[in-house]
Length: 222
Image (cartoon, rainbow, N blue to C red; front, side, top):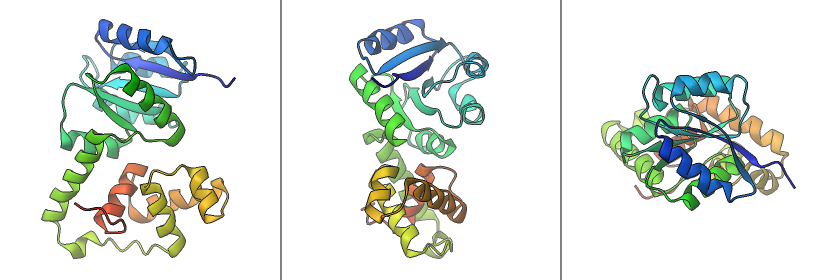
């Protein structure tokens, strides 16, 4: 049996933490290893407590989730971060995805959705749901309305293989699936993905997907 996915919950509501922890305790492949009640507490904890996935509340005292997110990425670059919030704020979701969040859930999400998000982020880097998709698309609509098409076409000069890999990433294929489809090693696919980030100026995979939609590499109806 593989090691369970190690999860830390950072939320200032004790009852919410307890509820999520109890719900997840029924799952054998996920384990809540620690809890924090604000961002500062979490960052101190991460220095000695490696984990796979962090459930991060946006609104917390002392240091909120938005301030904590970039710091988490510095300390634990491989940890996946799922933002928790009471609000469905499109511009906020996009900002957080660009800062490196891997998913965004409202606190009313039931435990099965939280479990699914943890597993999906751990295995495939992102968990897209109707909230994140709507936010990314509506944000792109606004940007497209403001920015003339010429400016949009940042001359990234992607070659055919890069375009292909970007399209497959947008279809939410895992690195391994992409590697099989384009007949490359997963390591090469990752190298191309990093190169794509440099070429397009995207900071994260979500940024790359937004770049693809904006530049009409993807045929997404906006």
